[in-house]
Image (cartoon, rainbow, N blue to C red; front, side):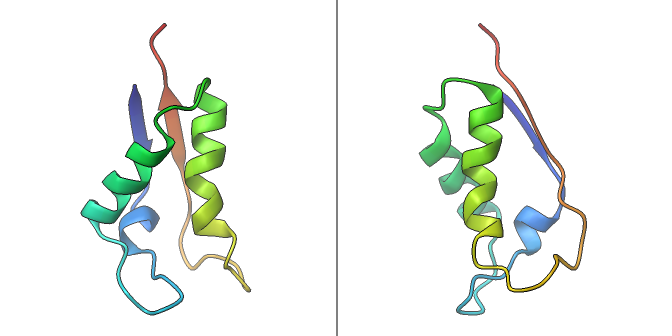
Length: 69
């Protein structure tokens, strides 16, 4: 699996104001790694980032996943 993402994953602030750093991004990716398709992986990994939003993201969100069969 290859997962590419924009810096919004690293800069994202949880609703408690804690930075979503590289360790948090890796833990989230590992929790979604059992997705059966690349599309399902991207949907699952983006869901926690987008669910608590009450307004638009302050930065662009790009997420690309490539799965090798």
